[in-house]
Length: 192
Image (cartoon, rainbow, N blue to C red):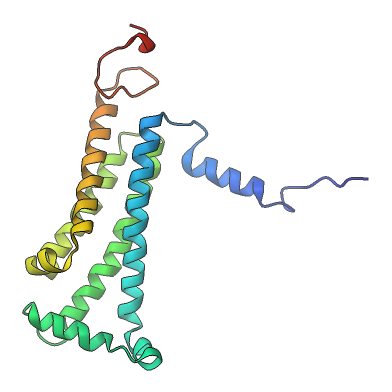
């Protein structure tokens, strides 16, 4: 006699319902999927880096006791090179990394809206990323942004902003078609 597996005995239905709740039941077109995946990968890199950075800064004394790496001294020395005094640079880095975790959380919500092909995603996407760049440039310092922010980070931010802007432009100008047409002209496949 076989037993019937209920939703409480198997985690699969819960995971599927959660997936449908977050991403919806409709599958987006290929261009949306590609854009979503590109931005999701870059989002994950920034989120993981922000979490690690925040943890490292908060656990600097623990790291020193366990591994002998003087994180606080290294950060203070770099802060002095950038023109900061005392604990100011360390406190600014803690603040920036804490706020950046929140910003990247909002960006994830915007990616969910992007996957659902909602035009509102763009504002939830644009504001936290520009705020993050402003934090690095204005709150910490322009020299920190230019010298300590890697070229990869700058290029990744440009790619995210550009791809989201192009995607927003396409869905904003999209007529009642099911597919997003990159060039905005009808083809034989589109019903021309």
